[in-house]
Length: 439
Image (cartoon, rainbow, N blue to C red; front, side, top):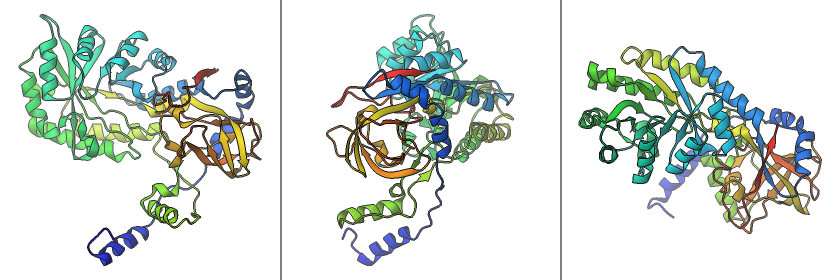
């Protein structure tokens, strides 16, 4: 017993178990149909190698960029999207994003070098604890770089590194009570006015903007609320001259692509308790739902809600540009994972020839993506445990596959795996696979 009062413990558990689950049900069959249309092209590429690989989908990447740009661009505000390099730093993705008119959002000196190498003309440099060498690189390329300052101390460091006559554009990152664990980044909103005044001691730092990045926004409300809170604060605490100094407001990223993935029932709090109990007592689980689907807002719905809030809370008091930092909503469809069946241990248990080092961690033990057998395809899923080939028990790809059957050497694809997979890949037990291009 973990609590002193056993009755209180039991009540808490039963209260949680009785809560209604409101997750989105459904399937991702549309993705399967779309992927099967490319079966011939994918098989031709796979014939070149027996190893697993990343399939770089140029057309899907460009379509995602254009969808975001058109959704936000129809609102007549001065605005600039910056692709979040951390979501997928594959060089061709960066080059295409730049050619399509995007800036690049970088979070390290390494990413800054990548952005410079692909000729990006608009770069914002965010992140905590920037090193002296990283700040020097940003200052050297200040014609193309805006630094999003993360603290009072970083303000002082930048000022000390600037040479005579050198100036650099900058913003300040803030956090609010809405940010939760993301309060690691920036300064508290309550300190913004004090920071704004402190920056005036360093005229070589052209403080022009405010960044209030949030992540993994599965609804539009977080954007609306942060805009409301920021507008209220600026109205109360900033003078007219201070407001005139604001050239941009950076609302960050967090845009989640809709209906591409989902999660298993044990990702819900109630399901987690049930799963733990079943494992403890060595009982088989039989949940009512196989999985739930993330049905988040579309790019158009994000844009509509954000600009409605801007019109209401920011436009009346400040004239500025608006920056956005889309990451996964751009990169998710840019890559697919392709692998083969290495060993069929039983009808419900197979080993694939790729390990989770391909994506960096054991993501698929909790999160669901459609897995498709291109050799024996079907429009219905069969139940089959698909493990990777790493010497690790958590190396797992999924519980279901769109397949008639599973046989050795079958070609398997997991589509739309471009976000935070290639970027997190690690040379662990197995090497990081190669990238092949789908045109």
